[in-house]
Image 1 (cartoon, rainbow, N blue to C red):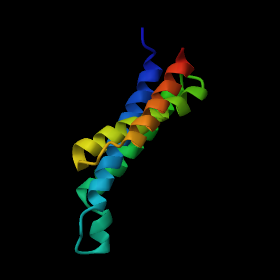
Image 2: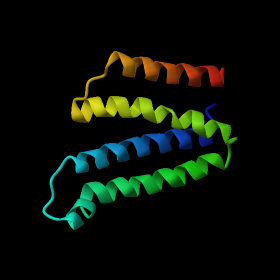
Image 3: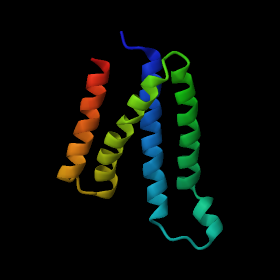
Length: 112
């Protein structure tokens, strides 16, 4: 059976990764004023998701050792790479693949 606290940490990483995508999407737009740069639906939703991610992380840490947090947080790099490809058409280079493969290998070794 999968640990529910571990699932909370993984969900936290997923929420934070999608939040980063929303904030990057907002940063790529031009706004009529400085105020609109920060008070638009993408930014407000992105920061709201970051707050949700923080709450999920706190919930995850309630039942796990702290050493698990850093390992699970590393999944964010992998997820953001794929989300950036999907939403922005960014290329997945050999260096990115190698780096993310090493991250996944490290996670596998840690939990083996």
